[in-house]
Image 1 (cartoon, rainbow, N blue to C red):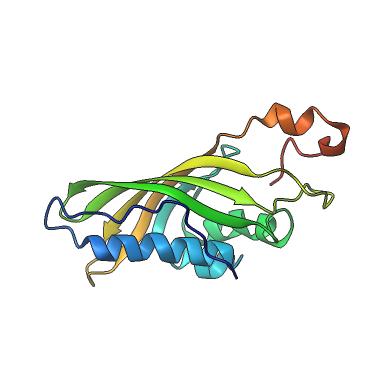
Image 2: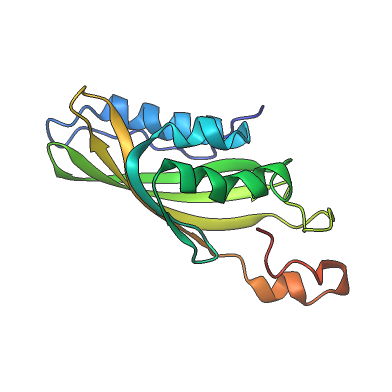
Length: 164
């Protein structure tokens, strides 16, 4: 397992937020994503969390989020490494923050197993502090910024319009 971070920016406290816990959750999300373990990743989400992937599929609850990540982790992302390139946290209130991440993945595969170029994107997550003082992901959306047409422009990548 490889965890990489090009320019991870530690959060500087602007309020009473326990920023070290927020940074730890970002690191743990990155680590579990790179372990390609959908069940372990979704343990970091609230039981009623919502998540929208970069294909526009929105799911609700841990079980559905786990199913959403399971196929790509077993197939198209099985060798992928997620790198958090930048992070920014915006406190909303004492118990919630919005986390903006800029990410890159390398080691992506097409559905037929062909290597693909790196992808980059952005992710927005809402972290919510639970009654036990534990922070979890309550909501998230990710967007692939890599031009999909560049994947499809070559016959080598003809099956890559949808790598999930």
